Length: 375
Image (cartoon, rainbow, N blue to C red):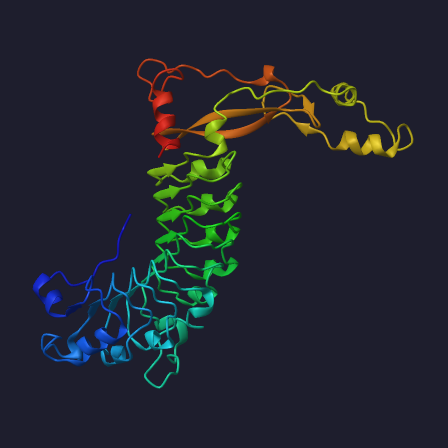
């Protein structure tokens, strides 16, 4: 997973432009004393400072003197007790804002995260010139996806894990520069189709949520390298996921589809209605509108075709749920759920022939399945 770093590779230069007040047990009053004292600030000009580290302190808010650092690009506020992120933060040309592990709520965030000028007005060009590339709000008390984040069109890395978010904004498609979207450890039950429009996305973290179904649009994420889905409620994957040729990390552990590692699901005996309906469909008869009751005609029209291409059978309410393992990227075998009319329609796995790159069903495929499913 790519991590944003400063464009500068000169370590000495970065140190000269950094104020490090991390892990000093500072509260807001003592921090302001440090910032106001040239001696304690190591005689650095506020205009030269590009990085400020305030992590692991006892801050409940931000110091008033923060605005004097007009060239600040990286601000780390992680692991404090901050309850409000003031609008003043948006008056700084920040590239990276880390505010994880605090007490922030949706109401305590600025209404807009766009960079503002000193007079408080948004840039004339709007969100297109927003400087923020990395935003980390993980481990706070957010209950829903912060809509103002979708204004940040140049944001590359968004971390919102470890909150109480229940849904993802349908406007997330606007964030076309996103490379990493981390939403693990929330209460998300549904992923919107709009996620499939994030063309630059390389890592999607959805682990430890309540997700039961993935949208088929996931298959459009052609640059996706890492997909973390463990600890959800997934019973199967969309079949189009095999189109993700660049995917190198797929984590599925602790999902029902892992627990249900059986090829034949329990089949309840079909009802007489089901058997009769199958016979009628198999015979090719097409009853007229006045030959049978309307309810029976509707029932016959609800027939589903067996997915086995060699079977012409149908089913209604009674079906065999079968996990079929499909070769994926030449590395793994991914479980996909298919519905069959009978257990006789299950196609046996074919062992690999000598020199073939396809793993044998009883040999290497077991290892490869564990590699995917256990992440």
